[in-house]
Amino acid sequence: MIDIAARPRLLRFGVFEVDLRTGELRKQGLKVKLHGQPFQVLAMLLECPGELVTREEIREKLWPGDTFIDFEHSVNSSIKRLREALGDDPAAPRFIETLPRHGYRFIAPVEAHDP
Image (tube, rainbow, N blue to C red; front, side):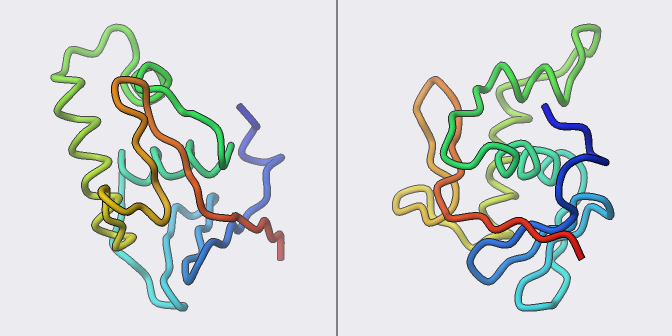
């Protein structure tokens, strides 16, 4: 993965803007509440739009090997909160496509900006 200092600061898709350095998501300029793991999942998806991010990659990034957690529930919960923040419907996705038993893919066009 790309070092945070090397990647663009702002990413835009649809009516949303993500500031990767401050960890903020904005919709038409207004801050959307999205913290912690759901934001980290969004950042992972935005790093490689159009490509599969596996559930295993998410697990490795968010929960190191010595962490004991109900991984399946935690990933599902993070994706659900992320979709709620984006107003995305899993049955007709505009942003996050589920690839059953494999992972997720960010399907909207992403523009990188570095002010």
